[in-house]
Image 1 (cartoon, rainbow, N blue to C red):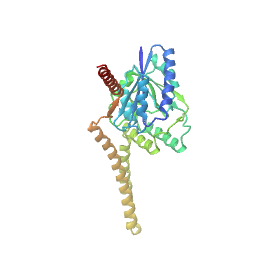
Image 2 (image 1 turned 30 degrees about the vertical axis):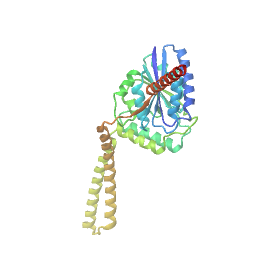
Image 3 (image 1 turned 45 degrees about the horizontal axis):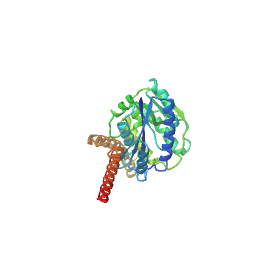
Image 4 (image 1 turned 90 degrees about the horizontal axis):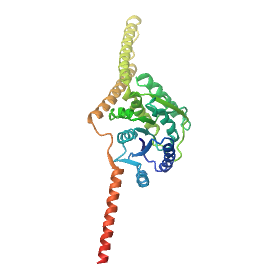
Length: 339
């Protein structure tokens, strides 16, 4: 038998979780019939949700022994949620997908067919359009992939998703990259392996709202650029060289015009413009250096990527202890009544 671990990071997903569970159970039950060698476990990650996500996990764990979960002590981010899921998954194959049903579970049988024969180590989906997104957001996303692929040696396919069906070998390779500042899209590409991309059209959420704002996605894109490219450092150096050359040329022109044509040198306005230009360039370059230095600083702290507050094992153990305690109390009450 082959175990498939379905890892589902969740943050405030109380509205869509019941629908997701029903859909994933429907698909995996059919897969168990079509592929009798498969067994499934469902590993949910509660990334510090403030709604009733954890309570739904309790309900699912009571209903289905295949359901496992890890609940964080606070919100650590989706990257930490995916890492925790991959690290604790027990399966021979591991699936990473979102709970919002924008990663359709119906793709799982086709993904498994590509992976099971060994020709591919991973099957993933790639959006062919961005239906439902604003034009501004779609434009920035497209430009991010273009810029990223130009300045980085790690190729990231435009529209590639975190929705992946991976072999244990590929998962172990990803876990070997235990860096604190994680950008999984880049990590998935960096480790290599043979990947099959399945095109699909964008699917909107059936319920709830996304936790990804435009600003959040922008910061996430900067994380990716700094994690897999040193081009910004080269750009800052290039800007410094260009500024020096321009300044040197302007000095020569100013001296030439003064000595040959006798023109007076502009004073205050020229000085202020030059100061602002050079100060802005210096601050920009210092900011780039500061970003890389801050990432290095966080890595050297060796802080944990996540902290687990509760797991399904702890929940089931406490529930069993409470049941045993209630049973003992009932027995004592019966004994006293008999006396």
